Image 1: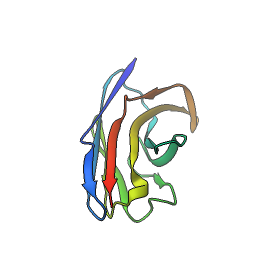
Image 2 (image 1 turned 90 degrees about the horizontal axis):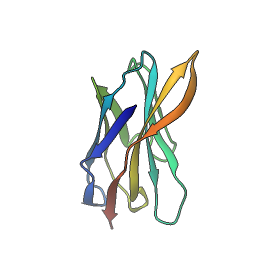
Image 3 (image 1 turned 60 degrees about the horizontal axis):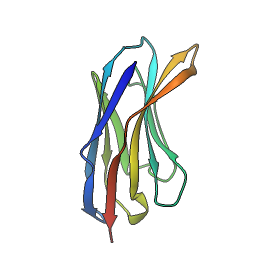
Length: 120
């Protein structure tokens, strides 16, 4: 199994910055993608950013392009968030998917989530 633990969430003012961390432990896959999702209050979980195992390919939701950066260092993936807006508020979840032939393989692994609150 794989365990994912998010940290460094918190309360920030609009326009501020915050960097989230996700530490992975347990089984290691040869090819995988790690991603951040978030769930705003009263809404469904949504995709935020994804990075491939090599770090060479990164993808972002339109709502965060130009403001958020995803990167990794060994077993930890980070989400650097800048120019935060009130609508960025939500519980942020770390995700890991093993990739086989470029496609996600189940099961998908999730962290417990960390709260990010942006005050206006």
